[in-house]
Length: 407
Image (tube, rainbow, N blue to C red):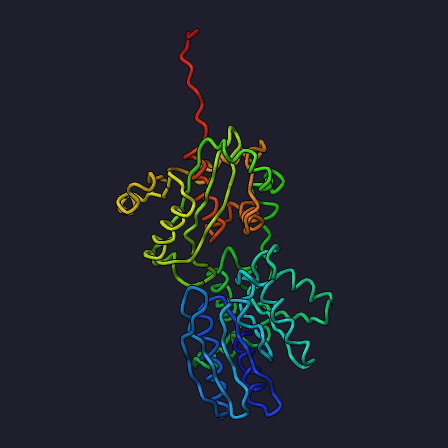
């Protein structure tokens, strides 16, 4: 689908009465591939264009902006997923892998203004399916109903094969096509994407809402006003991080796997009530992850930091040296089955003893909890629960042991 959209963007940008084309995706790798596709189409269609890339400052980091300018004067430009970057632009917009862009609603709100100036302008949201509670799925449902002039197009793996996908692969690779080889190839691809083939291949969003162990109604939604009444009487608090710093975890989305996150949870305890005060998460390398952890601890002024401890890791001792005098650093070694480890915290939610303050990602955190445990570890879902369990265990009330025969 993205390859076809690259062709459409090239044709529209090259036309004398065309439009500027803007491309937005969730990571640099997707952007690189899209611009390569545009170059391929422009070259094979013999359409002249100048291409350049430039570094711009966006928020707190430098970004590489790609731009192709055609003889028509129109451009194909790749932008970051910051909603502010699209404001004031004029042209068509393609949002690729929209289900994996965190601020999708804000981006759609920003680009909707573009079509007001010209009925010929278009907004295209394209993506692999994710989950039923994802904003992209909500847009798909609205498009199916024809709301606001939207149209819905779907191409699943099975339909693509029926339309000649594997035949084309055989033609380009010099292989001989047969029905038997096609069936074998299809099964191999499905085995590769299992157990997420429905979403990755067949455009069927995943629904964890009925399968998760946590229930949304079990969490207490505490207001800032309610918290202010007990803030001075907090009995214990901690920040805990679940780490994701290996090469495998930091890789791009490949073969149905997303990059994992370094995920932090700030939790407090007031009597028997456990309060999730805030969360932080990012896909970062080792060095940036260390900085994120230290800065958050200092910002929250928390005196207890819990870090997941791997058997051969020296990370805990390193952080103890770097945060000496700031907070106590505790290593938490995961032992046994994840569901059993989470059971005490799960029980507290069922009893109504877990409250969540109204920070920005409160609704998202509850959604992540309600989709746990997934069939296999998934980014954010697994990360959020692991970090929360680490935090809970560090401040949980311990049962009082009463000696037998005591008076």
